[in-house]
Structure formats: structure tokens, C-alpha cells
Image (tube, rainbow, N blue to C red; front, side, top):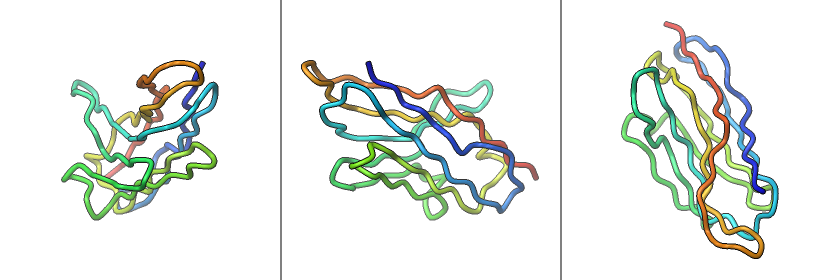
Length: 120
């Protein structure tokens, strides 16, 4: 079994900052990539940022220059530093991991989501 546990969401004023964390645990052999997605009410779930095991990153255009994704491979943890937050960043943020499990194959896992609300 694999679990992704997110933390760090909350309510913040526009212009403020939040840092999200996501820790993966369980029967993990190797994590290939980790990412953050977000879903606002009535909208589809969209990629925010992703990072490979070698540290290559990519970002949605809407967050470039404001958000930074990073990971600690030893701790199987990914972070999302969010600065200069805007009301349109309000959404449930989901952690995602593409990984190989011990004795098994490759699969995709999701966290339970953490709410980020930015007030104007």
C-alpha cells in the first residue's frame, strides 16, 4: 500500500504565501516523478507543477515565477512554495506521485487534497 499525505493548506490574504508538503509512504521502490494539481469548484483538475527524480521541473503558465516545487528524495516528500498568492489560486490542491512499488509495477497515486483559499 502507498499513501500520500498532504499538509500546509489554509486561508491566506492575497499577496501572501503558503507552503504545501506531501509525504509518500508505504511499499515504495522508487518515485519517478511527483506533482501538484489543483481543482477549483466546477472546474477540471489541472497540473500546477511537476518535478522528476533528477529535479527537472515544469510549471503551469499561471504560476510561473510565483510557485516553486521541490522534493526531498530521501524523505519521499514534495513541497510547493506558493508566493504572491491570488484569489484565483483558490482550489483544492492534490499531490500526485508516479512510482514503482516493491515487488510490483509502476502506478500513479493521489493524496486526499488540501484546501487553499486566498481572500481578496
